[in-house]
Length: 237
Length: 237
DNA sequence: CGTAAAATTGATATTTCTCAATGAGAGTGG
DNA sequence: CCACTCTCATTGAGAAATATCAATTTTACG
Image (cartoon, rainbow over all chains, first blue to last red; front, top):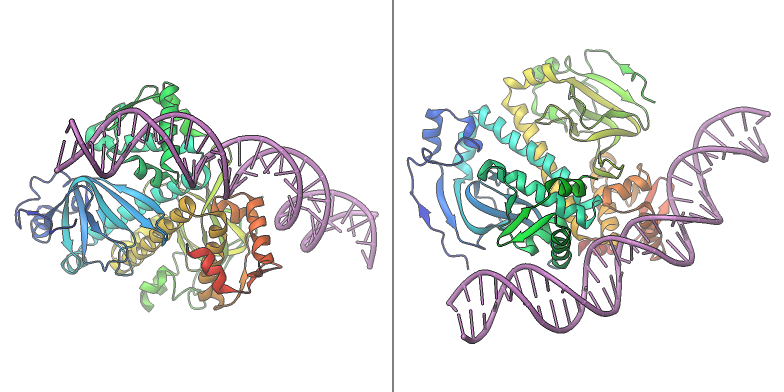
């Protein structure tokens, strides 16, 4: 289930054609730094469902998502799962204080990441406050998203949760695929449920309900927003 | 309701006797830096219930909590409230990317903060990666706490939420008042409810239930853990 | 194709919320 | 010092939302 992952381009010259070069942590580096930086990381591929790292694992690497989608989640001892976020290209994973990951991450569909061994990466940061500042920015943005999600989990109804999720997910895809009323949903209904603090049945029923109301259409691998304004109204209050 | 807050010690020499000097962002500064740093901030006092800053306010200052407890929260348009955290001495508030606060903060009981104007503070950070690193650490720790709280909000029952809260709060008080089975709860039941994604009635009932089970005793201004192990068992899974 | 996994749908159970009333403590003014 | 009032907390009864259990249906995959 978790074979050694394929490594493409073992080292050298791959930032040049990296799709996330401008968006990720790398955006804080100049050309010379980037050249040095690219020797630190290796591209690693993960197949659908493969685990990239698990909660409580000792952190040996940081990850920059290049392609694909990952689910980030925590499990309770009895198996209940809360997805704390989805990672998309440009997202940077692995920062922690304890030396251990504080959530698990696995691939939803095929994923490529740029993997940096912790030690060398840490040393590389040392003399580069720009990079540190960039990482800090990413952390602060995530913190803001986390707080928004707390509001959703603690204070919104199932309908609001689903509507908010659809709009939020669509928004996240804008930078990757442009704004569209067709929203690709690569994750399963169970993933959505575990993200929204609902059961799979409630998510499914809510989708069906939205479709019957004529505000969305459920299509293969996603949904289409037929009436975005109305979805926004459902999400808003 | 929000008079100009009292400022004690307009400037100079107050880091010396600051209770949080070793714990807060300041812990990353050496003696010389601290001397310069202390001219940047002013101690400001807020009375019970006063708002320190509101969501969407332009960020003009950062805050270091010195004394007291604050509730940090977000409101939905219809008034529903989610408390995203409680701030205690040593906590650093105000970091954001948008230039606006992304949550509101008000005092629970009397609060003293060390307030830093954004501009000067930003300039002070410039040449001090240690301070930036420290701020980054605080952000990463908060992020980890936020994820834990998402699990609580999305996947735990009312009983588990309350039990987890009592233990977590007790833990946070350790560094301030030492470990004790008496847990001070300066926040109202409504605050607790809004933190846990419950109603005040459910929180109240759960407290009563725990007391009837003999695992806690409800005392004035807090609770006593009569059977901490049992509370942990309720919180665990 | 055939089988397994994922998604949907239905019926019922349970939890938590809502609405309403009561009780307790803190501060105020007589 | 005491009644009064206000806010906060507790308790109860019933309602509503969502979960659970169970059965199909649909889709994915070998």
